[in-house]
Length: 351
Ligand code: CP3
Image (tube, rainbow, N blue to C red; front, side):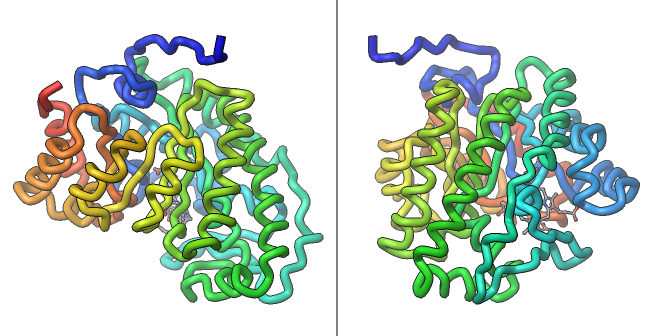
């Protein structure tokens, strides 16, 4: 035996697609499908206090996870949390400021890593959130867990925020490669623990959000994106070989292909800057794709949105997970999400 177990068809279209099995319809979910565009999110967020409190209060976080699934027949719910909970568990000071986003106490030039120690129990509320969601989620809806890509989380830890386009993190990559290796190694161990725990708590699919993959070129991309991702995927799969992993190295451009073929992921998320022709001819032969409708078109809605969705569905055919090229933005009218999901589900590609 080669150790590959037969995976049976399930009631969850997204799991079937990820396992290479046919599905009656194209599955659809949206990055940031829970969030400020939903009035019910804004109201719970106001009650919770801070964004961090919302993430770390399991009953609230579970409710927010399920809000979009209650409104729309999405094929998956994604755990409500944040990629910066790993730095928080490593004891780095984290704040989400209104109107400004996350602010960490950045490492800056000095880069003293000795102050970090991984306090696993700080992530316990996230596992509780998953357990609550698991009990309440409809049987045909899959539950996605996630963490940040190691380079992306490292970049936030170094610069503290994204205001300066990660100047300091890029400087580390150029001038302190060994220190960056050490930070990434720390994140690798913590993220392996975090992802495996999420599976044990009920996550059926994992996504790696490498939002700032586009900042590194050539051998730097290889050293801090491809190689550590490959190691993380291998470690998780050693324990849980049947849990599919979606990798999303946003804005990786011409480097998407190397990421897809070398990291061991099951599916590749693509942003809206990749042309459909390139993705279908160069990337789809390597991996199942997820994406890539422009979030601005979801704001716009109407014919323009539906035509773009149709072009994606026609180009990629049935072996595709419909999603955006990045997250839903706060100004999105919720009705447009409903129209999009209905359109994707009603679309018949020739099987
Ligand atoms: O619905 C989901 O997708 C699940 C929850 C989720 C959030 N953040 C909630 C959130 C997920 C998967 C993330 C990932 C995340 N967090 C990424 C990777 C994806 C991406 O957007 O590129 C990054 C870079 C972060 C870090 C982060 N968190 C930023 C940069 C911000 C500020 C930007 C913003 O939209 O305000 C956050 C805050 C955040 N994370 C919000 C939400 C719903 C908004 C918080 C609020 O209510 O004020």
